[in-house]
Image (cartoon, rainbow, N blue to C red; front, top):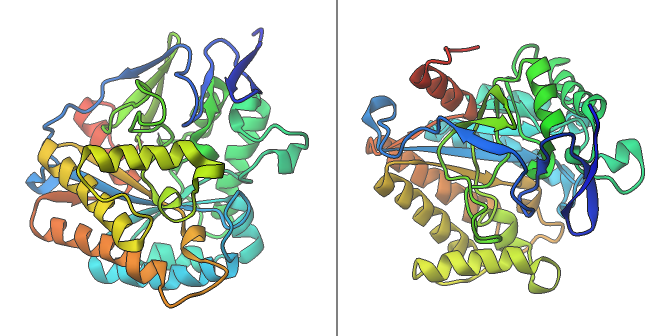
Length: 348
């Protein structure tokens, strides 16, 4: 297959093959079609009006996180205890290198809490493995994508065999070679594309799971869209100088919902509670995204982001579940539901 270079985001090029790739801040992928999305108004298990998924990217300082990685790992004990007590399952996307270098303990806490562990690649930024300035999976061909996904899965399976069924690519960045690699490796689900279009109008994929078609090829993988624009990094870490588009996205969301735009713990909780309320009202799904490295600031103050931001969100998920309004599930559970609902089959 002949490959060409195609501009994607800023002045960085990626290897596109025939159909292109995706970045959550970039342009619409060439040749991408969403196939068989769950319809609005779907009745979820136990008669719930909405499906809510709490997901974490477990990446330490291997990416652009500025927190304390040791504290991040220690925090997983607290987070998992809270999830277990609240009966709220979550999905943790773990960078393979982090699992290798810091041992299996924190992953075991996740599994013991009844949560799902998925892959977030082997390294977060591929330039750390291949050199140069090519950071994203979409910059590379099949060989590199296979290595990134396979080695990330194997790093977890070394300690906990046959646990990983899904992948979230770092930065949500992929091209057709990424999906070819997932298909070869038997990945059942992925969670890469953004729900919203506040950054670039018309770029949101909607919140319901679907199958990805690139050109004329339909992949047997359930794509679970996620919130890439009002998530925790924007609330806590971003500033107008270095991350203006993301700050503007949160400001836009807040203004269109008559919410106060404030980078505080209560401000972040209010936004996520509104997003959950909208999912219930609209009878749809919503996938929340948190980066625990950003909940582990190097300079500790009198306020704790885990207690003051994350725990109230978990409490609200618990309440909605208890009220029967929301099905709180993992990405794997959503993928199984989608596969049965659309006739793709069950557990793969």
